Structure formats: C-alpha cells, structure tokens
Length: 215
Image (cartoon, rainbow, N blue to C red; front, side, top):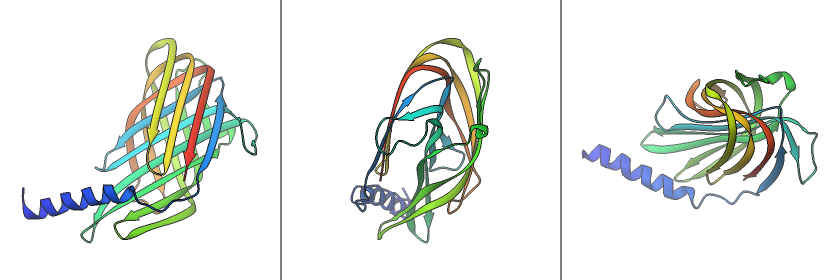
C-alpha cells in the first residue's frame, strides 16, 4: 500500500468515526399508515464511488401523530455523497420528508410502471473532521423510473435503513412486484447530476406502516 493511499485510508476511517460524535440536532419523528393504490421504494448506489441514495415514495400516506398534515402522496429520501478535497474527506447528506403533488408521481394500477419527477427541499449536512455545517430548505430535483421485474404476487416487505441523521423503517403487505430503478438527482450543494441504479418495488398496499426519524 502506497504512503498516499494509506493516508487517504486513515482519513476515511477517521471521517467515519467522526460521524458518531456529530452535533446533536433535534430529532423529528414521523409515522405514517400506508395504503393503496400503490407505493414504491428504491435503494441504490451512484455511478460515482462513495454515493448512495434511498427513497420511499407513497401515493397515500396518512400521518398517525403530530400535527397531521393532509393524507396524500409523499417522499422520504436520503442521498449521501463522499468526496476527497484538499487532503480531507467530506461527507454530504441531503435528506427530508415532504409531501408530493399528485401529478409528481405516477404508479400504474396494474404495477406495469412507476415514475416520479419532482423538485423538493431537504436538509443538507456537510461533515468534515473539524465540524459540520447544516443547511435547511436546500432544493433538489428527483427523477425516478421503476421497471417491473417478474409477475405480480403477494408481497411482504420489511425495509430498514439508518444513518446518523436519517433512520427509516417500512413494513407493508399487499400485491406487488420487484422492480429495477434508475434515478437522476440534481441537488444544490452536491456534485452532479447524480445517477443512481438500484433495487425497488411496485406494490398495491393493503396494510403498511412507515416510521421515520430525522435530525
């Protein structure tokens, strides 16, 4: 291992450890009952090394606590991007939980396709070894397409995803099918456009619950 590579590896390990002692932002918790006609989820890696994204997209999400915004379409998302600049690792995460306009998302009733095209605001944290910067209301455009794989059958899904700033859990039962998902993300403050290829699902939900914790 070259000296330069070893130094970069040590920087990465120290950066990961630094995440555990990041500032204690106030927690925001949300819980939603998920119903039909359909919902979709994607998890994938970006074409650029050190990039990953997760998005949960629902056509009907009903809050179970808090101020209870109107039931409707919703997206909860997280995008992580690592970069090495000026001899230092930088980790950026853009995340949020926001309502969607009905026309922003289309999931066919027969689950033959799914697509999303929306511009939303999220929170952007930049984490360095010497501290972190948090920005609210950072806009980004999210475009996703789901292509079904295989036929429709009974689908039971349980998904858990967690980072220091974003923790999500999804449980649902219904009819559905697995899907290949592709996404393009253009976010203010992130290097892009970001191309994501990943796994997803298309489902007609009969019973579902989605829990989310944001910092």
